[in-house]
Image (cartoon, rainbow, N blue to C red; front, side, top):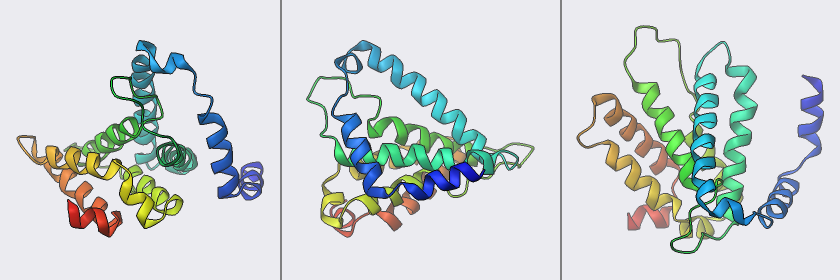
Length: 188
């Protein structure tokens, strides 16, 4: 719709960063307690449903912008927020929430089914890593723990899993290696 195009044109990436930093500095303490874990579970289910809708050709165009927005939100949150202290539950905007759901969406894409109507391209993982690379310099990106965490998660899919999860792990590693900062690639 026209209103969305006008609104999108009026915001720059710097405006988004400034707005996200303002919101993220006011993260309430309630996100850090047990309710935070319940919120993460709900967040995972909602994002998973949106990613599934994006894989459906009939709904893809309608939710494409939403998928991009979700990936952008998590990329900004991860690249701009310090990690929580040890022993404190991770907030809803932690990278593990999006990574878990994005990897699950990649697995669901490879799962065998009779009706091959779904196609998740580009994958949320690709979008997320591309946005991280836009937001951070190579040096800053190499310091983010998400590359190590993502490598571990994708390698884990390649062992003692059904074949479609192994394929998803391999595809995820291909996506990761093509977008990973060279410094991280050499140390992994």
